[in-house]
Amino acid sequence: MNLKAKSGEKLPVGILGATGSVGQKFIQLLANHPWFEITALAASERSSGRAYKDVANWFMRTPIPEHIARMEIRQCHPDLPCKIVFSGLDASVAGEIETDFARAGYVVLSNARNHRMDSDVPLLIPEVNSAHLELVHRQNFGKGMIVTNPNCSVIGFVMALKPLADQFGIEAAHVVTLQALSGAGYPGVASLDILDNVIPFISGEEGKIESEPLKILGEYGNGAVRNADFKLSAHCNRVAVIDGHLECVSVTLKKKTTTDAIKSAWRHFSGEPQQFALPLAPLQPIHYFEETNFPQPKLHRDLDKGMAVSIGRLRPCTIFDYKFVLLSHNTIRGAAGGAILNAELMLKKGIIKSDSLKD
Ligand code: NAP
Image (cartoon, rainbow, N blue to C red; front, side, top):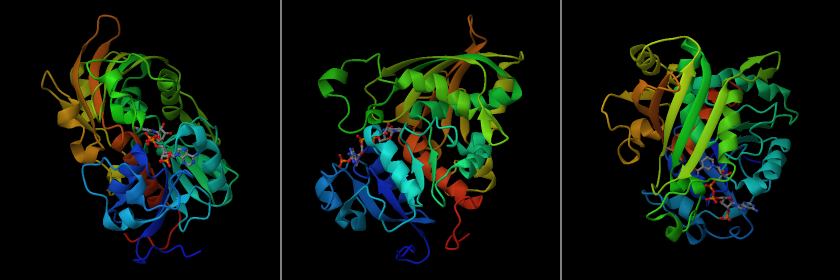
């Protein structure tokens, strides 16, 4: 198998679930990536054997890259001309397919829920828990491995909590999400259900938001992650916004502090992606807005390449200590962009080994 991309300079990568909402965002973000080149697109049997442009209902705001439009979609079998695959597969099939790819020696960067809570699988946000990448050495896939992204609402939520956990400790957190339509995949929620409406239920979502942050904010030691220990409660709602999840958060801290100290913790927060100046890293992972009516999906979801978390409205809470509002882009930071940043960090740290990566 020829593992060099055609240019000979970039690493060849494949996209599993390339036709879907997350798959399309992978294509858009990887089209001009300095380190990766898309050499394979795969989806279900329904789509395989056909040209991408004839199958995908492309709804990105940029045109389909020309060479992608003509590329033939393949089945999700581990015989693709690459060794790194980004997965935007539906969760009903992702678990088994991703395991097959890892067993066949592929590095799998997954957005699906299936492997997130496996004890030997990192649930990675590069600015927050890069130490958890050590878990891949406990996997039994030979050269293959699986690294997962958290749920799209969890990523922004945990990025906001991490500086608070480090500096003040977290006792309890409560979150009400207002989640965008693109989070439901394509075609997603029927227009007659969501126009003029809010749907106060997203299947399985509250359980993910109440469990995944505890793993991500847990400590790595002796080959395992010891989960963080604080109370979490979530309400999830689907709203008629295309992209960008807004979340209203209340938090009780272990150490008493001030709003200025919290804002400063957010503004100074950064991690390895910023130290290494990774291609998709936001320059500043958290932006705090003083405007009383910010952040807003339409205005702020694309901030810093869609990879930054916007926060505003920090104020005292009469039940918890403080409350605030956050926003993050669900298909960029919360899915495809997050998985690409994971791969960039893994390359930079030598967890994915490549002699064809150019600095
Ligand atoms: P989607 O639009 O429904 O796309 C699903 C993809 O899976 C399509 O490419 C589809 O291919 C493929 N697929 C379905 N059945 C298959 C099968 N039997 N074999 C092979 N491929 C199959 O979903 P999405 O919103 O992109 O989400 C993808 C994954 O990312 C899900 O696990 C989701 O939970 C997760 N996620 C989504 C978001 C978000 O904001 N959307 C954020 C974070 C995580 P065909 O077109 O051929 O059917």
